[in-house]
View 1 (spheres, rainbow, N blue to C red):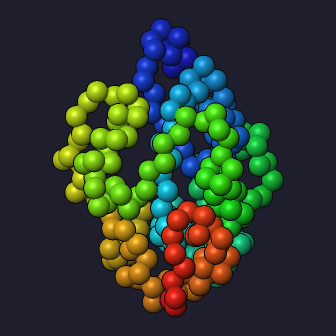
View 2: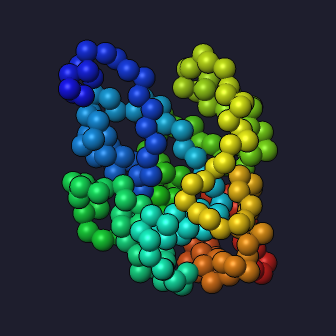
Length: 208
């Protein structure tokens, strides 16, 4: 029925993906949506890697209902297990285990450092969404050629359903407010992703 509907209409299809590389995104689309609906424009959201890893750590613990040590999280946990983006094990890219650390390194290299020139991409910083939500959202809609108003009512909505931790949310560099709680994880991030932090345009902390 779904395929019949797709053949009948020409929908504006919006998909959120956590693909670790452009090649994985292409594979993901072909498997799940069909190559005819491959994305014509891509909004690429970037965020401080320290905030990313804390959020991903909380997400994984909640989704998997498992205790995971902060020290082991990036190097010993498989990205696909943690993210759940290939639950049917049908992927044709990165078929072997891929640690969260290596998945993020691949993400930075392939999406930001060595991104193919032919990809229709607009980079958007999470921090800009927080500080200038109206202007940033408007720029995204314009890039997508969508002549619709910005849904300003949504700016204050809760941003996460995946943690009960009482820490600041929807804020730029919120990792600074929970540096003690996540000291082990943050040390691993700063040690193992120093080049990626710089490549994404963020600064190393002088001391966590």
